[in-house]
Length: 343
Figure 1: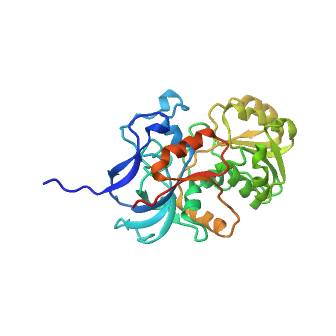
Figure 2: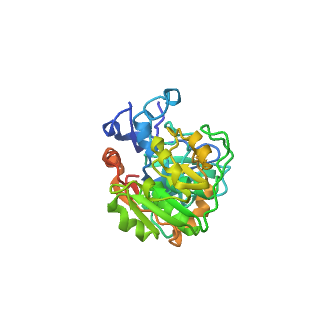
Figure 3: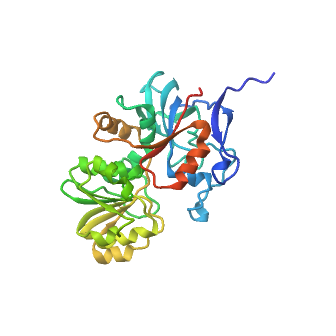
């Protein structure tokens, strides 16, 4: 007689494509392994790698694209409650409220499996959830806040970046003039707050409809990119954090003072290395990586309101395809979150 396999609800896909390939259905409950926790998921944060993978990472060079076995379950960012721990795990216990970025980047091709009611996570990637915020806001944070933190505060790992020879090193921010492009987005709105917390003068670039939101986060200057070209309006900057990145990031090189730095969050397509050298400015990026201790360090900053995670919109897990449709429209103000009530 065949043993019963425990089930859960999940969003699975069987081919690459648009939001319509995401199916809400039953899937096997994940089996906990050595060093892991089993989390009952309450909320899931959406991030660009979710839709990149859904479409087959078509933005990557062909040689880097995944060869994987369908069906797959997307996503990395969760907040929930520990329901079980492996025998060798002593840092968490059932009942703990936690948040995490699951297996990134090592699981970026479908091994993270966070669009589900349960997920297993290596214990070192987990932290106790900030007590003063709910699961929705906690789930919205991990990838975005870790990206901003690892670019701006502390790298937190020794893994080489395949896109550059040198190790990324964050720069001091106190008293510096910092521009954040894409300032209303997931990474951008947290980068703005981290820079202000560190004592920087912050210039935010976004569309005009986000101005009041960004001013509420304490920015010093605002540039509406729909009305003026930001790179024509500023100069003598110490740091540009380009939350958009790609080939267009080159235009910010001339806004920097000699010795200044440009950090493109998405560095693929940047081809201004020679120009940067001539101008005497530094261009650097890193790949965000899962890090439970850093999330534990960040949690008190969310508890005391130093860092606030903005929510663009929420959708039930069963409506993940609708959430992806919202993501593809762009112009997000903060993060999209899936809520989970089916356990």
